[in-house]
Amino acid sequence: MTIPLRTRVAVLALLASSALTAAFAVDAAHAARARARPRACDVSKVSDRLGPTSVTSLKVLRVSCDTGISVVRAFHACRLAHGTSGRCVRLVKGYACREQRTNAPTQFSATVTCAKDRASVVHRYTQTL
Image (tube, rainbow, N blue to C red; front, side, top):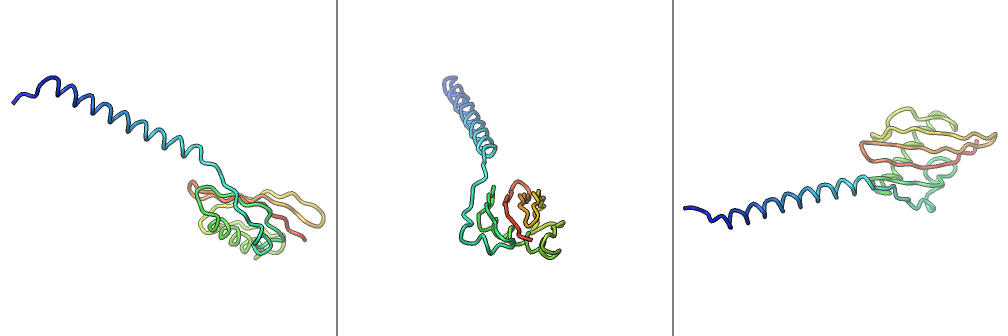
């Protein structure tokens, strides 16, 4: 049985159209991931119960705010195990954390970034000495 030329052309056109649609969908999904932005979490009700004197902000990327709060608590438990001005130098819940501090005579402020795979938790806090 011979398939008519018009039918073969129509099938090829349909296949080409499907391939292009799939390629554009993959490209759109990649662009959406590239544009992912951290979102702010409201910590106003728990800021004084997260470990240091006060957590002033929390932003998360690719994790929930509850997970972010859990990472912040674990980070400060680790940090405070080494004294009031101690540092945490191990993984916290699987996250690698780095801290940048600004010191003053009676307190310090810090920004902490914890990352795991493509997820991140960033928080700022102050600690009275």
